[in-house]
Image (cartoon, rainbow, N blue to C red; front, side, top):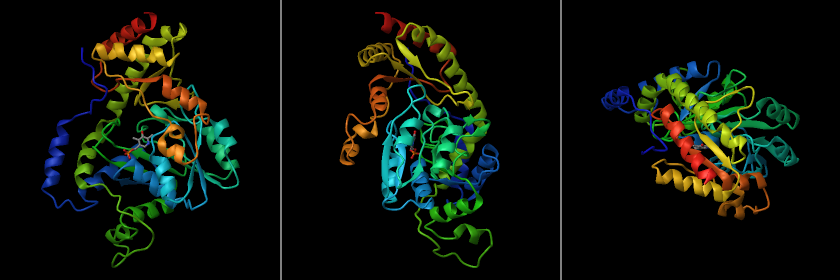
Length: 376
Ligand SMILES: *Cc1c(COP(=O)(O)O)cnc(C)c1O
């Protein structure tokens, strides 16, 4: 048996669109970028959005556009990729790490609330594994404390909360099309803005802070520098690949979500026997099957199961080094005692293969191997 951890969704259209893109000039924001924006408008109806070269730069620009300045504090979970924290530092702000909830590995609202000070300006919740944070309570907390909410929806295309796509509930939402994500073009991202004015600023930011977009819409005679910006638009080649993937979003999400529920069924007895905790899907959350993970009862048990899976050709992976334990986190003044649930997650979480090529029968086989590892 050989079951890879990732398998990029491939279509015949990938090749055709890429080749016909090569016949064009590759000018930024050409035919394929425009096509992707139309496709995106159906996935995120009513939410203005602009394409970026990664989710990381979408987070960076959201922080600048959201007005984060030196001295401002931004709260984000420690069990996380470094992107959002890098964005806060780039804006001159201070990232403040809070802990996670052991059911979802998403931001713990009690931990976040305890970190709010007079200098806190924003919160960056991550929808880990494509499972929504408790957004009703989170948005209420943010409103009471007057905090900007930037959703790190990097893993969350195709997921929703209360019927709304993730990335559209906060002031900004950032999505990733990195090669490991459900929809991918190698590297790419999406910045969703809460209103048209913020999106127009985001459109300027991504083309060197110029009003190039308005110029191409015929709204001015020439384009010029209007605000602080950067060069964060994706290449047309990436947009061509993305335009070939997006029509398959529903299909990809359906298959992955089915494998997620297959895993939950197959592994339920292990949870009942106390070997591991399964991921919890909150009431209003509809997940996209981006990640399937377990949290084992101990680090040693995780190691045993992981080794056994690898011996059977099943690629399983742990995940983040919590930011508060990382060398950079140490430089920011954090240490081992800071976010205990994130540290425990670092020691016990194991991700299993999930993608469109994984079959239901393989999920059951993987379940049997894990069971053998637990009871041995
Ligand atoms: C993938 C990921 C990112 C980074 O996305 P890029 O498009 O690679 O910049 C940021 N945050 C989270 C939670 C991610 O999973």
